[in-house]
Image 1 (cartoon, rainbow, N blue to C red):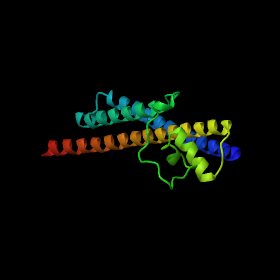
Image 2: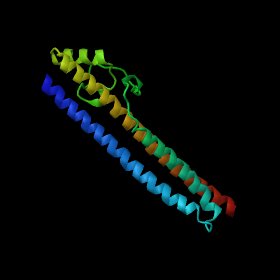
Image 3: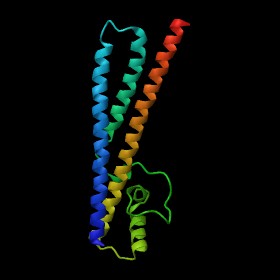
Image 4: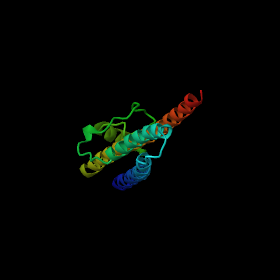
Length: 172
């Protein structure tokens, strides 16, 4: 069981790296957009009809940036990790971080023993705990990434609606 757990630990860590890379990408996008839009807003020749929706979009980008930056805050206490939705099911895949993240330590270890008909040594039990914690961290990072993306998309839509309504108001 030791080799299987080591393999699973490596896979969960790969997912963790992927989740962090996604946050780096959105932080890069948000930062570039903020600098560009703020320099646009400071241009005195820009019409108010442009400044209002751009300001709204800047607020959304800033919120998105803060959410993604928050994803990098270290978690040193596993009880502070965001719990995932859904309960434990008999058909959970004990190798998939999304399903693993639903468990607490004793439940996960018991499920491993039952499903794979094995006993866990002290070392394997601690590795299983680390797999569980990392799975919860990965789920938290993916959840924060989704929030960050939805904030950007919401504020893009809001900015477009404000721009359209201002145009209609100006011509109406």
